[in-house]
Image 1 (cartoon, helix red, strand yellow):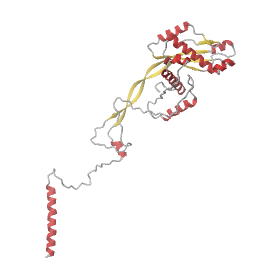
Image 2 (tube, helix red, strand yellow; image 1 turned 180 degrees about the horizontal axis):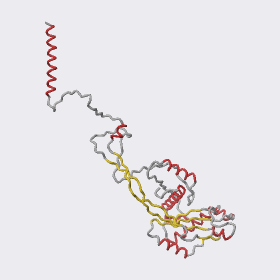
Image 3 (cartoon, rainbow, N blue to C red; image 1 turned 90 degrees about the vertical axis):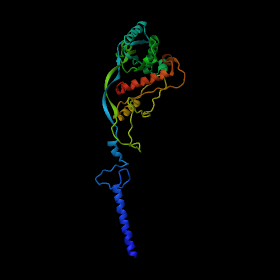
Image 4 (tube, rainbow, N blue to C red; image 1 turned 45 degrees about the horizontal axis):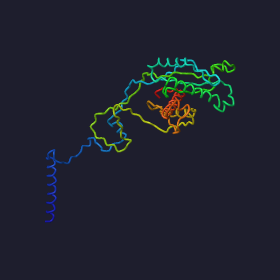
Length: 325
């Protein structure tokens, strides 16, 4: 009797199982039903290999050629004759100022016109009195260039950024220093007229192209996610503190070779990047200006701007960089 009961129970279970399978087969699509997946059907994983996202990430960046403009500095020399010095005093007649004024008036259509002065000296040793004031011929030529810059700026009412100067001491003679006539020619301040000229520049612009992809992408790590940039916004990265600041102690700024070398090395390290530019920012202390610095620059802002601009020009010449850099 127990044996038949057990057999009946087994049969009942089999019948129930067959009935459930029949219900599953007959269930409408809107109801839950079990399904045996085919081994040939591809699987879609929630977690994706990060290396696959590089090929399937959706947005892509394309490089489009564009034509823009960049400023090129044009340096005009010998527009006006050099200013001569006798006994440490510059001889700048009013006719010379009028000639220089007429030259600048004729360049009103030019962009960013400014004057650059270069002081020179002969190779004669300074007297004890002058040595105590200027130190050497380099210091004397610096003072001459500064004196001329101050005089021309006031005479022509030029803004501070329109005047810059440097000095070469006795390193660039144009005549022999063995005669009085030659030394007189070497004691000079050369006046150069600089302006900027726009020229076409062929560049590459990166454009983000959205892909038509039907997928929700969840980024869990920063290295997997891609950045999107708004149209019309330049993609720029600013890197600071690559080079130690250049300090100065007086109203003039000398650019040592080591500073030039460090900037050149930084540019070499960034050679693989596009549109690399060096930016110079000038700073001053809060000591009130006096003497020539006060007369030429007027404010600390103008002084720091002039110093930064002077260093930028020196670096541009030393490394043979385009103005846009």
